[in-house]
Each structure stands twice: as C-alpha cells, then as structure tokens.
Image 1 (cartoon, helix red, strand yellow):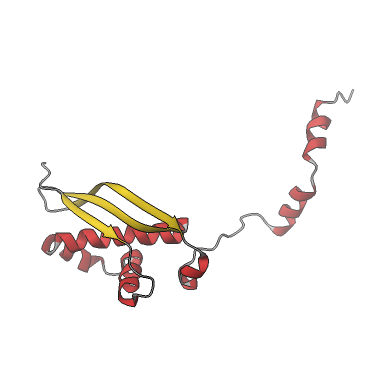
Image 2 (spheres, rainbow, N blue to C red):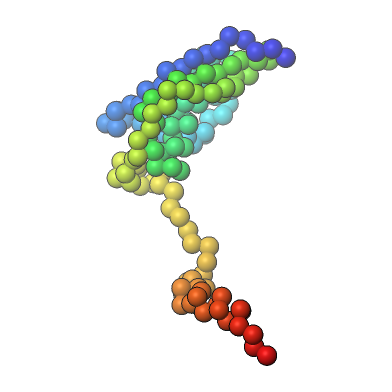
Length: 138
C-alpha cells in the first residue's frame, strides 16, 4: 500500500468571538456526523484535514486546558483514499482559563474515593505508620 502526496494544513486559531468558527470547533469535537466526515474525506480532503485539526484543538482545550494557536499538520492519503494524520510541526499553544471555555464543555474531575475513606487517609499519620512497622513488637 502506498502513500500519495502529503496534505499540509496550516491551522490557525480562530477569534473567540467568531461564533461560526467556535461552532465548527464544537462540531468537530463531538463527532456527531461521521457519515458526513467519511464523504468529506473522499470528496474534499483539505476540508476533512481541517476538521481533524479542529478536533485536535477541541481536545487540547477540553482535556488539557490549552488553546492551539497554530500548527502545521501533515496528512497522507493511502491507496484506498483514507486520510491519516502523519505529524505536526510549528505548534504553539497557550493556557486557556475556564471562563474561556463554555461551561457545558468543561470536563469536571470526579473523586473516586468516598468522603469517608478520603477523611481516614487524611487523618492517618504516615510518619507513625512507617515507624510502627519498623519497631520490633516482641
């Protein structure tokens, strides 16, 4: 299987006030229309690659609280017409404050420890635990 010509996308961040671009970013992140993306991959490869860049940007913002300012991304198309993300260079990111991200998109952390277990572990003196184990009790 061979790889055809590379597709280079110079992705640049959008203005936060540009509602249309923000909506495109959300659409790419939620991946709600995979059938449309499949058609886009074969019929408009550059736009499909841009969707993938937006998805990367979306995930960086939501999971890592980083805004992707710019990136030069390279994609390759195989003999079957499928497009693959190859690599990216000239990447620039900056921290995003929670107020910059829609509240409904924010991923909130959830404690996996019960409140009671959390309190017990906070009250437990690790210093004594180590010395108690080292002391000969016979």
